Length: 389
Ligand code: FES
Ligand SMILES: [Fe+2]
Image (cartoon, rainbow, N blue to C red):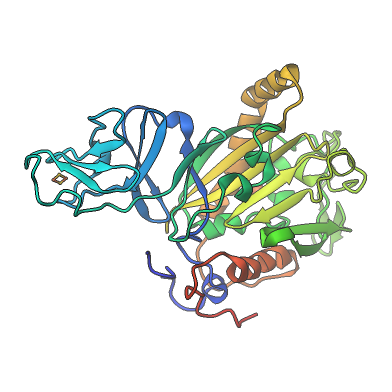
């Protein structure tokens, strides 16, 4: 098992204080690549600092530590030389490992009677393909049922379908998740994004009310009140009047009317946005027919894979075709690239150190406290300090 915590920042940091490890919470399912990216060749991936080789044999997926215990070369450079056996052979001397157990089944250059056979093992990881993605469980606890663990939009592929993409950020995963609990950056940073350029200023200075979700899966951060403009003494008005903002707010900013929305009344969706362990956000539309899930996957301490999983309710072939066309022609660029890149540039520029938190950070503070206290951990693997506010 990996060390309990991986706090290597000097001094007190909010993450150390709340027990949020640098390399992420281990005992959860994480998406790691698109299913379509794994072909016949084994593929090297990294997750929570672990180097892992993924391979597929006759539609079965396997995940082993990407290091041959013989002399340490990467198994991902090897081959699946015996189709149907679920094995991978090391490229150096042909040690051949069973994917399901990690056991050494043959040392090809040593002959069939090699004494090391069945005495050596490579760590193996639970792995699964679901919803067009490949998922890994990096922890030491018994994996939960993936379909039950992820939001229903991803879990229930009979009712929903999705299109996913990802981008790697040069930052720790915690900075990316801190971007999601409604800290009012969206109203400022994204006001000039192509997606929102024709929409009026979104309400800010809202009251934030973080509430735990059922089953301690995460938080809903409810918003109320707010304003869309004000005079700042000695400076002037924000925002300045802009005649081209003639559209109605949509998406994350359209808080008004959620109580009476179709999402709530017809589909029974309780919250317009949620943040879940181990580090993802679920943002719905008022129609209840689309939602975006963004998932911060810790690759290592300095890299985070940000998945954008776009989900639609299945409503017939025509609607599905339209959703796919709209996504590939418009939304993929204006949201998943341009809008998200506005965040990426800022998050990657973060310099860790003391913070001076303020009223807009109610959600961030609630998330950090919640995540540190509620994340699933093996017995005895408790964070050192949860006693600090
Ligand atoms: S290093 Fe893998 S078989 Fe020798
Ligand atoms: Fe953002």
